[in-house]
Length: 159
Image (cartoon, rainbow, N blue to C red; front, side):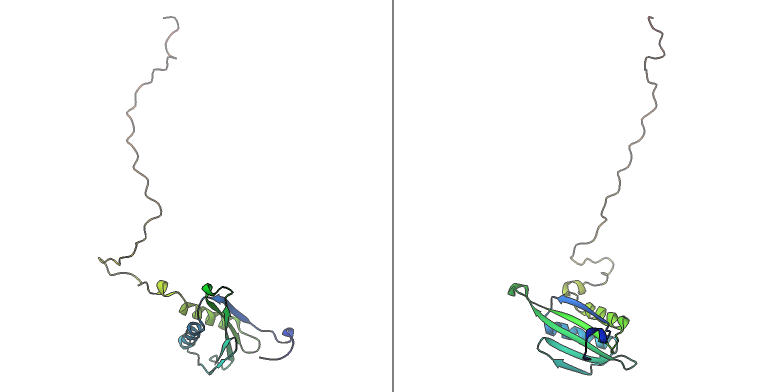
């Protein structure tokens, strides 16, 4: 990374923070995402905070992917990781966002990603099936036959 004050080198870094995953899970998601997008893994560096993955775009610009581990204050909460991407010196928001979205796809919980697209016709999956949120209105009752109403207004008084 270039040295100097932050304002001297504009960067485009997009990041997912607090991904509830172990470092190795996130590392595998990053590597799979690079493979999906046909980007090479030039090298990996283990750091005190996690790891840095070096790659390059199709037109040769360098990509730096920084994966950092964050330990939760409560051990029951487990560790989380954050992923940051920077493309070249000035950044490329489109490439950074595309790569991070691909990493996110690989980090979807297994329970959500293991659902088949649709069961074969006539079979059941053993899962709850979606139903309409509202039942249809009941049919209307048939109209009553018309009958004259005796209101008393048409009768002469006193008779």
